[in-house]
Length: 91
Image 1 (cartoon, helix red, strand yellow):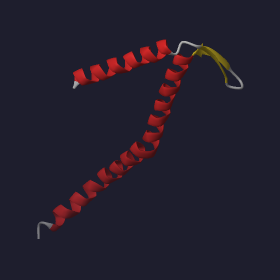
Image 2 (cartoon, rainbow, N blue to C red; image 1 turned 90 degrees about the vertical axis):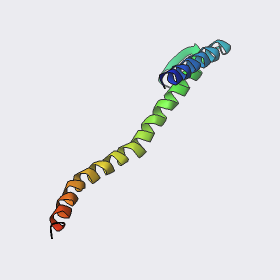
Image 3 (cartoon, rainbow, N blue to C red; image 1 turned 135 degrees about the vertical axis):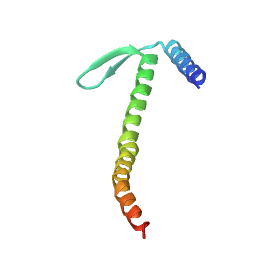
Image 4 (cartoon, helix red, strand yellow; image 1 turned 30 degrees about the vertical axis):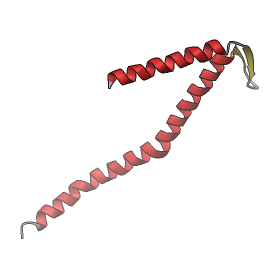
């Protein structure tokens, strides 16, 4: 499993280097309050990284956190159910 992760990481690094070298044109990004000067490759990689981070945060907020809350509620309810089931089994 570690080897697969290492290979995927190396592939991503190689793709980033390829994108950076193939898109070496200078660009200027004007964001209204800020002006950034960079190369096109760096801007593309930064945009992809920013998108992945935002997507991960949205996924965590919309799926993972509600599932954790549901699991926490079910774990709290489980001891109460076990106590009532053991009391009825003695009869």
